[in-house]
Image (cartoon, chains in turn orange, purple):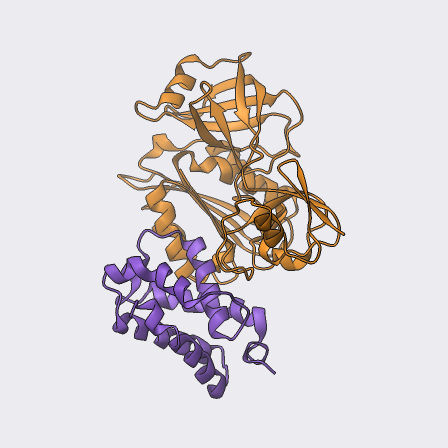
Amino acid sequence: MPKVIYGGQSYECGEQSVLVCLTAQGVHIPSSCHSGLCQTCMMQAVSGNIPEKAKAGLTDTLVAQNYFLPCVCYPQDDIEVELPDASMGKLAAQITGVEYLNADILGIRIKPSHPFEYKAGQFINFFKDEYTARSYSLASVPALEDELFLNVRKVPNGQVSGWIFDNIKAGDTVTISEAVGDCFYVPGKPEQNILLIGTGSGLAPLYGIIRDALRNGHTGKISLYHGSYNIDGFYLVEELRKLAQAHSNFSYVPCVSEGEAPQGYAPGMVLDVALKDNPELSGWRVFLCGHPEMVKSAQQKTFFAGASMRDIFADPF
Amino acid sequence: MSLYTEIGGEPAVNAAVDIFYRKVLQDDRIKHFFDGVDMSKQASKQKAFLTMAFGGPHNYTGEDMRKGHAALVTRGLNDSHFDAIMEHLGATLTELKVPGNLIAQAAAIAESTRKDVLGK
């Protein structure tokens, strides 16, 4: 008889679903439809085989993180499960580099104290002290570099970003969390076109995702639109232009929303420019990161332009 | 054969959900009810609704429908909005070339939730 292990306890599952099994034992799991549709009860597998049926309807990035729906999960073998984010452990890490990417954004390189699994585009929490942390996206790609790379924007009166700008230097030891988030590249469908739209330091996850996709041999279009008020807000410009020269399927369009746009830059709001260039998005994969208002509006507009809800990945911050 | 199998099961729901949800969000009569909701979470709920209308597996009770829509009823949700949803359900299935007799059956299932959804 298969067992379900949860919170260090082992439960006989028998013929029941994982949700029924755990709920009957007094474990509280939020749930609603009990039919594998509403995704309210979603859990994460730590070990063991999850039947395919329990993953139906989940986005590719959720499946890649071992998420499943316990209400329609009838395990054949023992499995260990947990609720999402329960696993966000902390670890020590050493700062190995700090550089200004522009006047408001610091590039920080970090080496975790022990091997660290993540996907480019996910985020970690960076702790100022035990109670104060902020989330930063990972612009690094595990297969390409040993260190984590963060882009920290200076937030006016920001408790954590202010502290990072004023105090953090190479050699410091800091505390970070493990990586979470479902805004990342999943290999497969290499011919699918990809649209990426970001504002400000929302470029960080996109920079990771793009290089991860290229490294995986993605052949479809990879079109990046980065928005800023003026030319001073851009960064990694040289790196991205070089990447575009080296890969004919990758294009980089920095968009200036206020004032003059010099040569090599597009005038206008980043979302407007991206949709004007790509009015038809049926079958595209879409990544949206940065200003919450832009992300929300872009989610709706790219959906109306034909992208499937399942293929739109958003990370507002 | 059940209605759900005849319509095409889960793949049919997957094909329908984007089309249906796009129509709903672009309809001036009802789109304000979706202001501020998380789009991807809402899409899962639309999928649950379509699965139910297609005669597929679900465990929603009339009480769930009442509770789930009570806040919207206090914001003015009424028959005209329910009619708009019925219209989009029909149009979505027509667009997917589902035969008329099956559309009628799906519409009847959706229609049967009207009282509970509107808290009557």
